[in-house]
Image (cartoon, rainbow, N blue to C red):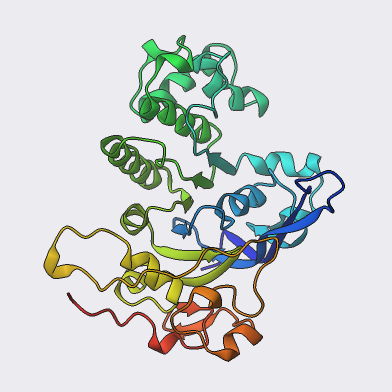
Length: 329
């Protein structure tokens, strides 16, 4: 099967001003050589600590931010080579669900206007047909016609996120980038929104890039998982394989920190030492080696490539065969 989205060596840096007058501006590497494929109908989970570059990667894919280098191919089209005029029709196929349902909706617009705006912008409906389509979209996400003329502040967080999902669905996209869509919601509401996302994926044949830091949500939703650390993908694997036997020390640490209610099923947990390195001044060699319990001199001298370690499971680690051998406690 041909990938719907193919990303190669994606890179993004930001210039950070000094904190004191006269200080020299510095370069922050947010995304550093990210590559992956995303296939039709698949959900790829993108996980990692806050600040590792997950959300920046999602925005680069939709060209909400412009990449410094790399290649993004969607359905065979090189997105980075397209002018804004030629990119606009493709934007219908690429939509985003934002993390914060409180700030991602315009407080001055009514719900009917928010959900209907993409239809107007792309010339897909107007007048009575527009109203009917907006009502249908609201019904798809569990809201009704009575909500059309209300403002965002009149809704709960879960309802606002449903509005954001309806807006993303309005133009019938193929790919949706979901940027931590449940992290700002209560636990019971998270389950409702996750189930809704699964239902509409099956109903409309959607492909998801699902960004999150909650590994239990990722395990429930994803077909494959990409683990990011300091702007790089350090492991890419089918979800079942990753959760059964990770091949990178960082993946091992993330899984070891997940709370497991059953004492008999708990894994040994070895807390990571040290702090996350600064993306302004990343370490030499493997970016994880200052905190890695398996690190050896080679790790500080050379950067390990992301390469296949087991069937369908790739990791950027020189000593991956030692990783992931959890013992029961």
